[in-house]
Length: 299
Image (tube, rainbow, N blue to C red):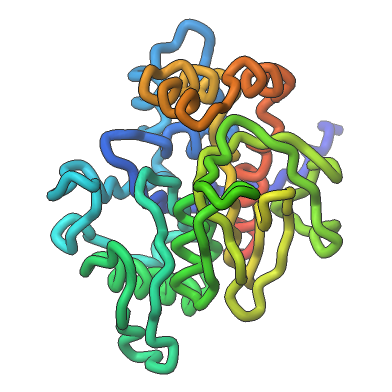
């Protein structure tokens, strides 16, 4: 009698939309690599790796900022073409980090129809559309992940508050390199943090901090600088960069403009790199965990 074949679960990948808010950069390649557990192969060039990543039929990338219209790298409405009508095609949406800064602003949260922006700093037409996009994702109950700028934008859109990071002397602070984050009490059973210890190292590159989460938000991770991870229903946000590898961050720290800026802020690059040598890309598991969470949500 022939041996009975095992029943195996057949699972198609979740369709993922990545919204890229970077000027002439492609963080979505590293994000997608972590999502689909597709690391760069030995000897593979970045161009080859990018091509292989983008051939994934389950991935859609919207490059929002290729040609900023002004010198401060802000975005005008003409640059923003968000797929409101096609959201139901996706089981997950990810908003990347960015050189842009999610500045605090005042939003009309009493008007659910328009949510018009009353005033703010560096607020342009595209922001209103971006916030409405966040509302649409939330209302459709589609899992959403915000990374750095993406997390800040989500917080601001949904009624939370941000402020510039400051030193004890009141000067602007740049959290750069790596830092340890600790799991908050409520994160013990969270599926997106599955497999991570109580305290772990993460890549950092930001100058703002979350001072107030939107109503109903839960802190997942924190460090001495403030909130590092949160959730609100099916929405997740992380202030750090789980997609960045040790090699990517080391190369970034070696850039001339970054070195010069570190020197101006009296930061010792050798100390930053020494901490980074102990990083083994463990935070990347957040991406694959999020994809698994999104797919389970779609069942």
